[in-house]
Image (tube, rainbow, N blue to C red; front, side):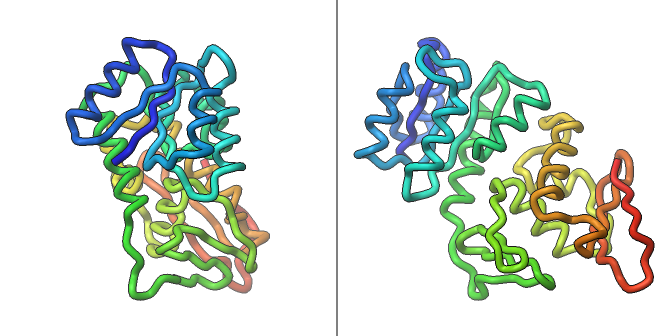
Length: 238
């Protein structure tokens, strides 16, 4: 696969290029955002590794340009020193598909890259659409509509939402959620799992006013329940 790396730290850029080249990928390294953007106007990559702190413009600004101007979905992995909840939310809101916090090991970098590339190559199902009431998941385009309107979810949010709807009324354990996110226990801090759930819930309006109750079993997982006639309009979400 062809991977673009935007990283101004030469040692970090060399590390990422060496790891991914050893795995069989072709890599092009950029030290400044403007050079990458110029190439994206005429080249097509399979994946972008993106740093936050850059000498010309912030990584989040680059990502917003990518999402606004490219005609195809370019998977983007943030590799960054920023690990605060607000920073992670900013990356995801800007359109990041995944992130890894520096220092990142070769194994974890390969795992994150492989997971994103697998999602991008996911073949179309014999039944492309799965419908749950007014929520429709398209498995080939990996898009979801509610009330007929497209809801912009990141790949992780899409997978998480589909998992919860497929197991409607059941407790979905945290290790199942982590597996869906392409991670194992301990690789993703607990509060970031909750952040993914919270953002997915907000975007899809999974609240009693719109027909659903999302319950959190502290330390165990989540349960999505439909609101039936006579249910009290209360929500348990910790």
